[in-house]
Amino acid sequence: MKRVLLSAALGLGLAGAAAPALADLALATSKNCMSCHAVERKVLGPSFKDVAAKYKDDKGAVDALASKIMKGGSGVWGPVPMPANNQVSEADAKKLAAWVLSTK
View 1 (cartoon, rainbow, N blue to C red):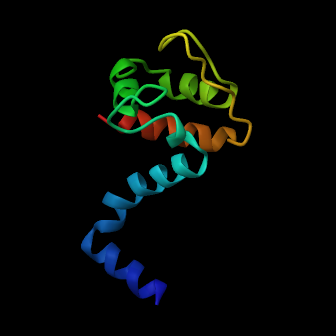
View 2: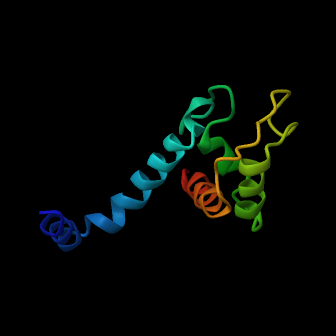
């Protein structure tokens, strides 16, 4: 049954268009990013769209943001520090950073 649904999605061109955004939102949710962030509005931390806008011209943004996701950081968005996220692997951090930067 899964193969039939996947084949249908591929045939309609849906897998390439919708799957990455949903997969990365799911990853962000599973890694507790959504506890402090939202895609379009500030929660405790900045919205992902604000982060994407701030780093839109920065070629090293994926690596820099991945590092902040894993190690935490402070001072860029105000006085509230972002805690380290030890549960996030480097590969997942880079995937999350790339997705955040794509939320324009």
